[in-house]
Image 1 (cartoon, rainbow, N blue to C red):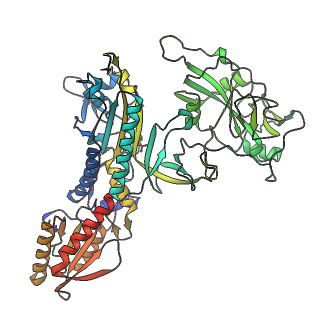
Image 2 (tube, rainbow, N blue to C red; image 1 turned 90 degrees about the horizontal axis):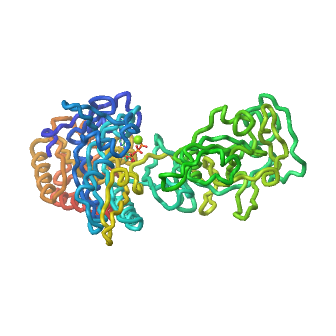
Length: 615
Ligand code: ATP
Ligand code: MG
């Protein structure tokens, strides 16, 4: 391609709303132009890189045996009613009515569409497993689109869906996609961290996120320096640790009995630290949570019989609404995602003050673990760990807790002696410095951005949308699904985040809009002849070349080449001929090569780098 025949229009400055490098560079190189908030359009140069990313994804998924399809982007609202997600998704979903008054949806994701498409024609177990995918437009009415295409409203996503006869087959489909993901990101030159997105409590590894490190990342990752443990902070687990007293020494079990202390207004942990002159690590705070749809059995727990238990017309009995008291060390916070998982619940939220008083006898701030009779108590493992035989490994001693009455605290409370929990579990928010559950290593933290996600869905959609196949015995069975997504634009932006310097982008060979740029100092006379010859030879070698034939000053052309970030630059200058200068964007030095050898040498570099990335 010649520069004068395509659209090359670089900008000296990025627009004010571009605050991260990838967004700034995508705008400055002219790859991208903005049509509206969260609506970015790819110009010819940008589209070439986007297509490269798409094609790497496509090639690797095809090689893994996935089948590409192309559903429509606009789908009937009725399929969202069928799955039961119409109301839940209404905020993010862009909908419109057609002239006949039917609801239409611009797809924000496509579980429903693929379920409908696979349901039709599925009859026998012999047709399973099948994994289908699309690389297609999505629209999500994001509240706060930001960072350019990192979080746009319209974007391109690869989304795949597996349909399997049983759990073992789903596990295989899931592993197949995980392996393809690793090859995909490696080929693009991206360093991804794959993090567990499930908790031990839920069992198995049902979900994994592929993250890139990023200062502006929306996710917080907890990582172990000694082993491969990596998890989103939303789900990270940790090994219980021994709390220390104010002198940094192990706490000693209480010898004295509980004594009540008047402490009006001392409601927060900070106020307690001042009042008792003790560290937060020696307090137990107790929070009352409202729990939705728990399938745990609370029948024998304090207060358990007062919760309504749904037993009819349901696979497993559950409590539509119940309450639980959570005891945790004073300096820690409860992770509600982990708590919900432990309780096998669809969600939890802090109880309203009147329920706190109803179940614990005290208002928030004075709830204690001692003498709770109306609500089950869950102790975080920072307080005590059940040994499973009715005894406990106690982690906190001689503690101060809420007294169960307004403005009263209890001193010398000893876990195990003064209260026993209904269950113990790890429900704390994990922080850097906490210990790895697998190897005991000390966690550190990074900010990250999610590029892709793989997830075992189970029968959520196939059940609600009535998908069945006939098994070996001719009996109808519901297949189970997995879903797998990669944000194509976000991946492209992340390549720029990882590969750039103060001059501009440094494309990896597999994702560059053109692998080589030829810059004649002046596109005229012998320089023009040499540049044209090189261009023809490289093109014949199958290399993607941009010839900068613009009538611009050499400095402008060099700056643009660096800004756009072509991996290889060949400068054709009169004083160097019959040699030309070859420079890799990622290296500082150029070297002179005879014009006659330049194409072969350049092609070899391109091939070697592509091969390295594909290894
Ligand atoms: P996030 O937590 O970032 O909103 P999500 O959980 O909504 O992500 P998924 O529904 O799992 O994302 O979508 C799959 C992938 O699509 C994400 O991993 C991400 O790379 C990409 N993606 C999601 N929303 C956007 C968006 N608004 N702009 C660009 N890419 C997106
Ligand atoms: Mg989202």
